[in-house]
Image (cartoon, rainbow, N blue to C red; front, side):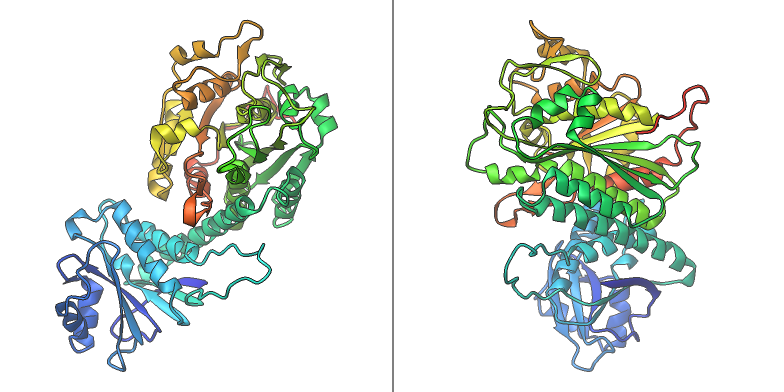
Length: 509
């Protein structure tokens, strides 16, 4: 969709469809009142007919039949004006975008931005509308021999604003929405691909392609032998059951001052997770192709930042492998030595994500990071604790955690913080190694984070458990692209990062 901001008078602008907000109780919004007066009270007549009440997310299309310069109007219910908050505004924007995506029209103009939302300015509202309109056009049909034809909605979109003074900020918000939506689409595409296509080598090739988009991006891929030389015994242990070779992928975006420390994003890239010898139930095992959505979100975020030419330094690290049962696979009771030198007793081979991430976290230290954030579909226990609305957040730094919480609220890609108290660490005790890879029955998401925390003691670190948010099941099965929105928002707001220590220069990969 070609989407832009423009000063647009609803009374006179020609468009195939004007999107008009209304409130519960059939109250017209400000642009609705202007349109109603200019269009001969046509909207008032429709509202009196009772076909729409203004409840949140309701929609109604009316054809103006020459009574207005707009060929049709899409009325969108905003709910009660006094209750309109971030969540409800996003729901209304999504409802409008969904309805538009089903229309056979060439152009549309949205006036939803005229509605006030408490503590949110016009750029925030414009970005929400733009992301909803762009995301509504997403389709994944590239694996079908004959994709079904679908209506993709208007080819041209306009988000209306009242004043030229607001035009630059509104267009900047749209540009951010375009970058985030494109990054989210990349993450969704990678997640939706089957495991026989999206292998560790495929992810590595995608990183190389992404690096070709900008001179500020560069990528390097480490092979199995190179991982062995680095001493990544934990990562390699997970990979040894598969015929697909593992890959450690780095992709660096250098948009900021070279003296500034980078933000490092570490993504779990298990392109298919059978559970290994501790094999998973068969019922929904097909969904384990989504176990690389953390890696996909890293690539999507880096693409968004490159498209925005953000003035930041970010390093993406992806630990990519399969986890399969075979005669060479790791077994419960095996002990491995991590890159850090710590030893781990593997009590459950289905707790493999932490085994590859711990080596990736150790590897990340060589970039002298400002902060490190790892992103992983790590535990079903996180879904039990939080459901599928927020991602789980764990951190060893309160300021970093608070910044991620704010970024989640601003982007609508929310997280909720859980503890990593020392009390939980005892459950990882082992009689035979430094510690085990799983704890007891309870608090599984927390003990998994506690395991990772042991490899993140020298820097500010956060862990995002996206097991409940990375994909949908059922009839809407598919990757969501989360948390690309959250990560992009955080990086853009986090700033340039601290200056590097003169006594400790960054090491190259």
